[in-house]
Length: 331
Image (cartoon, rainbow, N blue to C red; front, side, top):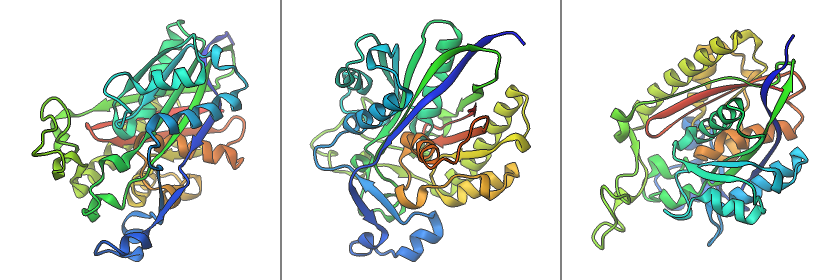
């Protein structure tokens, strides 16, 4: 068997803020209940960033842990790719802020905006750069401060989301074994942007004194439509990634899906015919953290010792844009 380039995940890290918000906290201000939220979403708690704590702050914590886990030095990182829709600034990128704090002086750094599929996109970009033989070690991050985009009078959205960050270090390996990212698939549909979007705050509709506090500055979502599209799109992406990798569903050891809604997660597993005990859930304790969702779950599963050597892990995500994707990784 000849050697080839593998993009291997050598370290993961995550961070969730200290402040925990339970469903009971929402009962005090909204016409809702713990039972209603759990039965429809699977969420019991989520975490909110502290006052003044930014996306870059959380991303830095997750990135530092991933780098430590990988055993490399920040100066050895060649590129940083951050998936986020809640950057600290319009300019500069959140990735450059992380680079400066890490001391990753030899890295390129940039953000991508692919919403909940941001980490899958970042991972795919990193892998492609390695296969092109350009970079040796890449840090990929998903981080969000979604509380910045929540209307806390809208019970259909505000109970769903939390803040957090997750990260992974991928390294180029020349070896005959088929470890690393085996295959991936990305797709999007911009014709359906109004199903999940933030209408106000960009250059199309900038903030003004009249709209700065209007509902348009917050996340708007048509939940029923998103549910149907998310299940179908994530299943389709998973099948394409499996086909590219010459694998079958039966060879998957773990499904790590975007933690958006337990009904969506169960719907994906059911359609793909993956047993529930092979699906990793952490939605109950962190809610939907958008681009941070998949890497948070991945790091959580790894640190619990659930992912073993040679395990095949399928990661899938779907988010606003609309964007979606899948990646297969062998440990």
